[in-house]
Image (cartoon, rainbow, N blue to C red; front, side):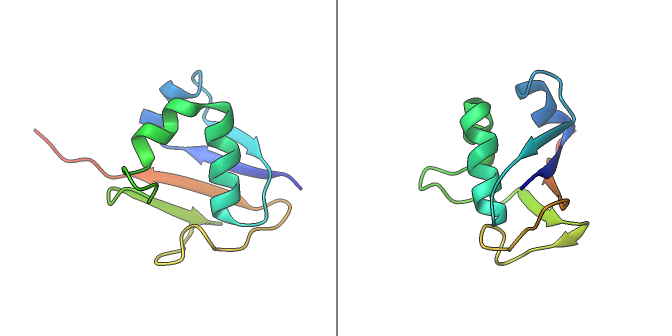
Length: 90
């Protein structure tokens, strides 16, 4: 099963400049785990100290929010996951 992950621009730098990454999994969480296994530094940015998804990250499946079941949302072959990061500053 092949799922495409569309990475936020900040995460693209941590994935060797890739915007789209093919991953496998049956849930959004399994796909996140596959992504992190290939790009471990991404884990430091999107996960908190207990492994939870950080509050400034959101996972969309086929452009639809998966909140509050971000990591248990089912995915199927051909789906697209967007990893969004919301930062503020000035």
